[in-house]
Every structure is written in structure tokens, then in C-alpha cells.
Length: 638
Image 1 (cartoon, rainbow, N blue to C red):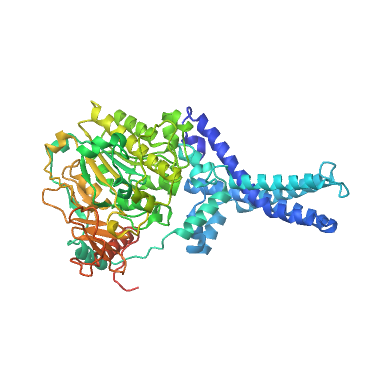
Image 2: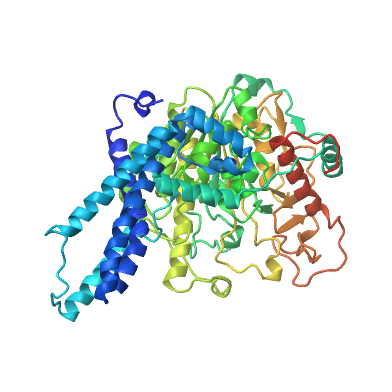
């Protein structure tokens, strides 16, 4: 398979040039790292004439070895791509994990091992001869008796060190050249050829070290855990039949906002401290749940837990990355004929999402490259983690306006992330550093102010997007928008007792058009409690008719029959009685009666609920994920 066979004939010239440019940076990075030991040893040897002569001989051999390894790596990467359609990834470690003899025999039979080895050795020999000739020529000959002023020598050494360091780092930005830089196009082949084999091996090694080792679980053990936690032996549920939704399937947007934590939102106090901007009327008029927990404290962790019920954050780049999970939250929409897309403000190669999400039912992945292509102005304001949220939401609106079928759009923003920076195109509204914020935040002064303004910008961009939907003649009556945060704002203390249930909380805002509400029973109680696991079950009931779905205890928070009022986070959980720790400490803080977002300052020993619930729920997630990845055991015996 050749790359040009899977690329369009026109319109990708810029992407190709970008692939070469970024690929060149990766090559320069690896080359600088490879020759750094030679540079260091040469600087030491240069002090001694005899040692330097021996070093020259060593350098020739060293260069030949590096050249040979480069060729071997390129050949391996080429055949790996032709076989698996990807640069080398963690599955290369199957040589050790599988039947090694069988794998080696397969390689010997299917690939030109001898011819490739001869080519590599030949180029290595050529590199040896050319470097040897160069050092003996007038160009490469250095007069050991030549005198250099110590200042010139020092300047040369410092310049060499700095240039090597910058080249090895790959960039002058705050983040060194990494995997997500390899995503240069919406066309996967161009992303595949961008990194060299040595970078790919480094990433594969990192993934291999991070991956979770999955063990099978018996059906009996899984069913028993389902009964214990869910009260039924399976996680399958069904939405009621709804003729209106059947005939008028709406678009569904899930916006997971970076760092939209309630531990900052409680600071909102207009007009002095405006943290919502144009999102304010939507907070006032939508279904808003404030006693709502993020599933985790990490972005990728919350994404995979929300979408796939996975307690394993590394699943998208683990040994299970090619396994399609029946529990994917987007599958009910796929089965109902929806187009399913993921829109990310950063690079799609982050955490291998561009490779993983299509396996789980996503039809299209949009990232910063697509945003910049659609809105060229975005590139000028691109920051550390991606393009500003405002441009991301512009593309989201464009996708919905141009959609020719019902669309589910899952959005992950990036702007409200440290290092905080307000885009130059935005004029912040008033913010104020309160005594509470000053006491709890790691930032102070200008840094604290920028944190608040960045939060305000992200909220304002979301508000502008929601206003546009409500004012659009094509979207206002058939577009549901759900908003939540991926996790708390990390730069605030987690140790305040009165905020024991607030620390890991995020908002859940739901906008449902009136035409849908008129045709779907619902009850809104802003004091209901929930967490990320409730997002999709709630959405299913206002967008899908008579559709099976899978959830591990998630509920429709607008149900007329009430809810269980439980919110789960890996660290802490909340229910109608208060907030409690999920560890063995047994800490429990009741809610304050006068302000039920906060807790009593002193813990209580008496807990009016099952303190082991969170542990059992986490065990259920673990069992269920393993049951989807590996065939179940026939018994519980090892």
C-alpha cells in the first residue's frame, strides 16, 4: 500500500509540506540526541592530543553505526506501515509477548531480511568510508598546533552546546517536540510518515510501560458484581418509545470544558468578578446541576470514563487500543443513524485519540489542524495546548449548520489550561481576587488574575456558541447542548473541609429545545446529584426513541421518577447526605443546611449510607472493562 493511493489528488499541498517540515524537526531531534555522546567525549578528548587521535577513529565507527541503525529503522518502519498501516507502536513488543520463534519465522518468510540487511550494511560502510575520507582531506583536517583565544573557544563550545540542546528539544516553546506534533493533517497517512522510527519506538516504549495488563474475569463474578451495584445482571437499559424523537432526531452536542470546576465557579460574582461572560443567560435559563462530580481529576481519564466506562486512563494507547468496546456511549447514536464526531482544540494525536476513537464508533475526528484550515485566523492565536476555544466553537457551529443528518458532536476544549493565557482577540471583563481564592490558589497577583480571565474567556466562547444555536433558524429547535467540565481547577487547594464535596465538582448544564420538552416527560430539580456517568443516559432520553444503551448506573437526571442522587469521583463521592472519601479513611462531611453546595466543617463518624459503595462501583467498572477486552473465564479459578 502506497501513501499516495489513499490521499486526494488536490488540496493537501500544505499538509504535505507540513509533514516534511515537522518530520525534519523529528529527524533533527533524534540526530542531535544520537551524536550528543560523541560531542561530549570529543570535547574531553580534545584536551589531549593522543586521546583526540584515538577519538577520531572512534568517531568514524560511531558515525557508521548510527547510519546503519538509521537505515535499519527506516526499513522496519516502512514494512511495519505496509503491514499495519501505522508507524511502529507498542504492538512491536509482541515479539517478546507472543511466540517469539513463530514471529521470527514469519518475519523471515514475509520480509526481505537479507536484502534489507545488506542495504543497511552497505550504507553503513559508505558512511564509514566517506567520514574517513573527509577527516583525511583538507576540509576535515584540524591543525592541533593552531592557537584559538580562550574566549573564542569558550564561545564556540557554548554555541555548540546550546544549538545541540535546542535541536534535541525540537522547539523553543514551553513544551518540547512530542507525539501530538506528529498530527499535521486530517489524513492519517501523512501523520504516519511524519515521525521517524526512533521517535515511534520511544512512544511505543512509553505506551508499553504505561499500559494496563488486563486479566480475564468470569461471567459469574461480573454478574454478581452487577447485581450488587446495579441491582440487575446486565448493564443494558432502554429509552421509552417517543414518536416525536423518532420523526425528529435532534443534533446532540456534548461540550467538555477544560478546567470548568465548581471550585472556581463559586467565585462568580457579577459585576465585580464575572466568570461566565455570555454564558450567564444560559446558566440562568437551562437545566443546571451544581452538585455534580467529574469522574476523575484528569482530562483523558474523564473522557474515557464518560465515553467508555473505563477506569483505565491509558486505554486509548494500551494493549487494548484496537478492541472495539460494546459499552461505547456513542453506539446508541450510531445505531440510530447519527453521524458521530469528536472535536478537539488541540492535536488529535494526543493520547492516540485520532487512532482510538474511530475504533469506538466515531466517524470523524476534528482537531486544531481542521480548525485552522476552516478558520485560518486561528493559527495566529494558537497557544500551548491548541487553538482558542472561540475558533473551536466556530467550527462546531459550521459542522452542525452543514450537517445533512443527525449529528452527535463531542467537544473537548483546551484554552482554560495552565499556563493560562487570554487570547489577544478577547477583551476580558472585570475579575476580582477574593480572600477565599487568594488563600486557596497557588497563583497570586497577575498570574491569579490571568487564571480568572482565561476561565472567563472559555465560558464566554461557549456562551456565544450556545447563543448562536438558539438564534439559528436551522438549529434552535433541534439541537441539544450538554456542558460539563473535565475536572476541577487543579491550582486550588483540595484540603478545605467545608468544600469536601465541592472540590471535585463540575457543573452539568443542559439545554433542550422546547419542542422536545413538550414531547418528553421531565422533572427538573436543581438539587439533584450526579456525575459524568449520568450525562449520556440523560441525553438518550431526550434524543433517542426505543433505543438500547449501556450504562454502569448512570441515570436520566430529568427523570420524573426521581434519581438515586449519587455522584462518583475516583477520589470522593457525594450523595444526598454529604460527601465522603473513597479511600479507607472513612471521612464523611454532611451538607450544610443553609448552603448545600458546602459541607459542615467537622466530619461525622456516623455514615447513613454504605461507605463501601464507591469501592464496589470501581470494581464493577474494572470487571466490565476486562470482560469486553478479554474472553471471560469459565470459572473464578486462576
